[in-house]
Length: 361
Image (tube, rainbow, N blue to C red; front, side):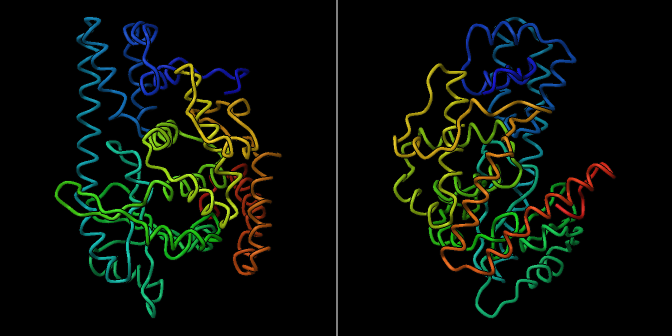
């Protein structure tokens, strides 16, 4: 990571709890005051790592004799665990309802397990003859859900957000397309055909395969938000170290979607961040690292996130994706992606004028 911008102590401590606990970590944890603990809790929740970091923090507090801190950590774990269990209880009825429209895969939300995202994300591949708008009809009819306001970006991406009674989290449904402007249809076939069934609280749930998880995460971080969360670091590091990733298939899929350079860069950035806390990075194939446009040295901390430099680095990744769609003759998808710079500009202007880009991005 760019050492010119040092993260605050709570961010560093959270990274150490997740990636490389040391004696320094124990000393830092023992010295936390109530204000620090509150900040650390908020940070862990926003990065979706509470259930993976706070049990370690709790044990450090116990070891140091800090009973108050240990109790604080335990309460944070209980509260987040209750939220997750409540959200999970809605998954099965939502999936069953959406199966009336077509094949359903849970994406992103379960990538952080035992943590859970701030909303419930699903991909729906509608059956032939079923209009995409049927998703909204089914959600209203079966679950009494209300449709949240759709932004310009939502409409381009063929994405809906729903408010389900009794569920604090939004339900975000991608229908037939992925990507900020819905330009990605190449990877959706793989997402559905290679989905895996897992058992969660007694329910059988279809979720994405490791390679598809990496592709979707890359789309979200390197081509849309341009910042990386600690859960993204941990999630992808665990996948890379698990031995379950087929890198040959991953490269083929990413190349077919025009995302290979962005994916290779993303994996190198993750490895570099891990190295900062463990002393060594993740062992990646040389032909992955050689295709990366940049590494962790250009990633910087700002406002609680690890930021990706947009100009010129992320812009070049966008250009590579756009050129790939043109070469493949995907005219409609190319036109969709061509709208992204204008959409981003409008969102930035709206943010500056009103303090929010709601309705655009």
